[in-house]
Length: 357
Image (cartoon, rainbow, N blue to C red; front, side, top):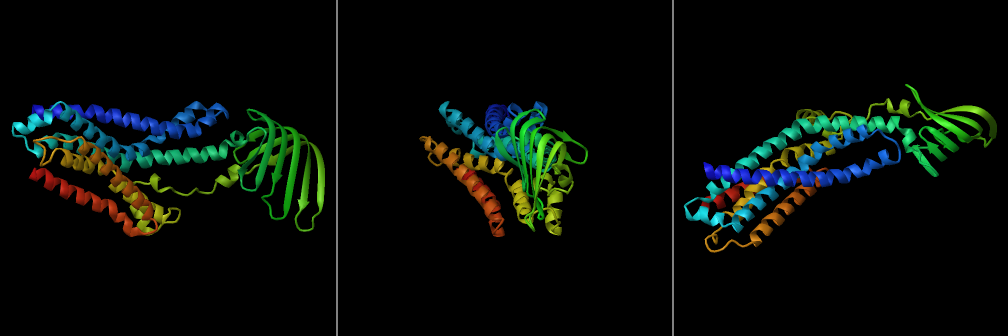
């Protein structure tokens, strides 16, 4: 129907605009947290872009229901201002007939959101965690800030007076990783060298002090050349833990059922239920807003703008309650039922209201 195509075309633009604006704001907020790695620590800008892009699927999953609901609200308010809703009602359009094109778009967005949650999110998040792990183990030089005490790994403190790329000057190293001895190293200058098996700090013109923690004996050695092993690469060879967001829904479900080691069960359950229930809000919140605004017993007289505000606030409260129940579910699993109950209640009430008015 021409009118349905007209309504559908009007919701697509606001949806994409809202999604773009919201995603950009949240994405930039996340990106600024790691932008310092480029500005002051020399990370390749291409690596920064890769990390930022890999964050998008997780942001999109969270923002699509909000963007869809806001787009539907905008279209309905515009139709109200232009008196289009009054015209549709006056020529015999039922509430269902007016709501149908908007629900069709919302359903399509919901399907896309589920595809993102099931396929794109785990694939991108796994790459993100791999890159994060790589940076943690291969960019130790970036973690050493000038005129500051740095602890790249527990038990190891490094101070550098100045740094130029991998060249450092005025070095102090305090190594307390061993239970038997404590080592203090000072050097005039040095260089950070990456090898296949270790991260080395090559020092020149300094002293090496070693204290035996059992008998308190102290030995001091002056050197012109000394190599200190930071051992970050060797430590990172241990398999890192698996984040539930890295797994597909099927893999996550199997991991939970088998209680596989390396996957936190409580967090895995929360992630699974979130990825199942959250995308559906793109449809159910649109249905709720339509039921509140379009299906109104007072519609013929006057549609109050307060209904639009009420619809938006109620949708926000539902999403907030869902997010809280997901976190609470890690301690009390019964809370995982909250989003499913809300979906059922919204669908039943909204369908009844759209059918009645």
